[in-house]
Length: 529
Length: 50
Image 1 (tube, chains in turn red, orange):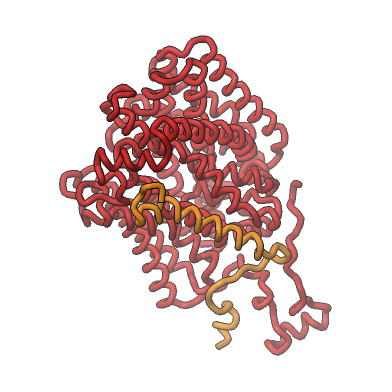
Image 2 (cartoon, rainbow over the protein chains, first blue to last red):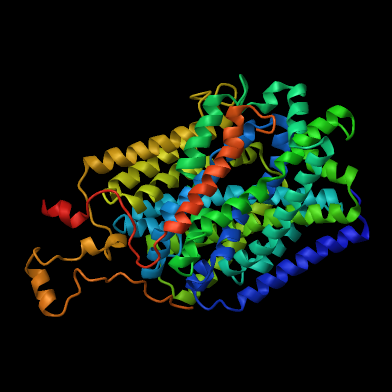
């Protein structure tokens, strides 16, 4: 691919700005709280851009265009049909509880939150941390594969040089500043990515004569392109609808790279318009799908080159239709999408290993600064390992990517949602839920992509969706069948405080000037900002 | 809508519109003055005492 001097300038400019933002943000990091949750210091714009930026990865930018080209609307309905509602509901149900909990307790990671919610359970912490590390690592490998694509295709570099350069940039801008650098750069990256996605979608729709003309011509090629699911093949309703509802709606924010962003919220007022902003930002981020459907029509009309692989639609379109500078912008946009996802997963997996497994589960003692240092080292080790695996990715890694989001949602979604909003949920229920999610949404899904590829178990039903269902059912049944237990995250609720008629303990407290019954629930100030 | 079948339109446009309406409703009704949130189920203390 040739993109000339102007294209090279676009990419160099993007990389320079990203690194500069990351390094500037790193100057304000003084503690693990700063490093992992930005000292609870972010407002609505940064949180929105951080959440959506991490959702819209490099693979999904290329994939959205490819899915529009290859399946029409089926993959859109499957992965995005309920996703706007799912994201909004996630904010509604989780943003406030997680913001408050992060302010009242030392909670930096998702396993931290789950352990706190479920009676300081080491089992809950280890199970959830293991899921976070494995899921994050798979995502990192796939993002490195996308980096390698950009390096080899655009720059003509070797795979090793592409992976090493991309990984070095991510480490350079995000390792020092942690989540603060990651989200600040996400803001810039998301502006670039969304701007590009909207622009190319509008271009495609205009080329075919408008949205109605696009659908008319697409339906003429194959009516199935306009249907929400297909009558046979991979996109039958049992797969599409179940995934859309259970993963996209009921467990959308089970994935840690989304829900841990809620820990960074500055105060409760920030939450008010987060869902509204994020809905539009998400729409802009995934708009590239209409470039894919438009390309299918243009290809049929003979206006653009024929492609063999749906994933090559976007690069082919750009090279064929646009100037070298736009090609440079495309590459920068793909890099932006790749890096904004990679940095989140790097931090999540590094912290899960050091904080959740070594420090909190095994009991290795370390100071705040040591913990930050070890987390950075773990991040680098994981990045090197993911990069090495991406140089020659075994087929199963790509297969695992296909199930990674669903598996993470199945495993972690129900324990987070029920944990925050159902007081009767208890530790035994959480362990059952995590286990059911891992077994059905993870193990069965992975076996279907590898061992049982020819005749998948439970086919044609979507196993990740069944994993979510199994996880919810297991949590509810086991929690109701076992004894209730208190949880620290509800301890500040007014109805958890001793009431005047309750017991002697309260009377003593009241005589001593206790505050039961009064408004005791205002947030303490953020520790660092 | 825009030449799409009704069911597909519901997923493609309806999901977004419903989410925006829900987000606006949430924005208008959200209480940021205390740090309690609505939960299902009785508090543990009440359950234990009964």
